[in-house]
Image 1 (cartoon, rainbow, N blue to C red):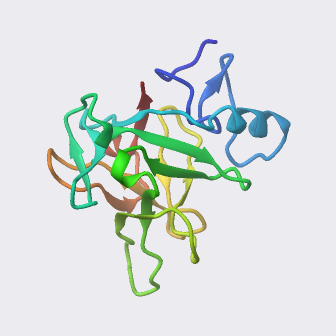
Image 2: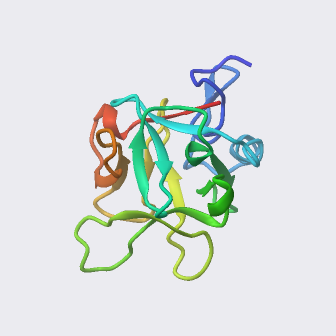
Length: 172
């Protein structure tokens, strides 16, 4: 399979067989690509910084140099609505996911490691149709996306922009 990703894990945003799969177009092709993602164990590397998204013992998110540390392992779980849940694979944190705040007073929501399930759903992300992929909060205007920070800093959400710090790769 030829594609622009180290591995094709963002199925709705990855190139399969050289043809892009549209994230916003539900259908057999997008559903097939999304179904292929279940159970993947990957690191999320920020294109702009070269750092990976990881967790700490205090259950917070931090950008760190990419290693084989389980704190940098993620499972991307496709949801029925073609959105993704980003589950931690750190042994002590397997029921935690990358979440965002949903408070109306938050001009820019914050991002944190929290429960994977429960209302309101704050652990479901829209993977933008780019290669590499942009990871954004669904149904929000203006659109805000996950942006990598410096070594030891948490990732943050920022208005969508053509910024390499908002682009992510899934690597084995």
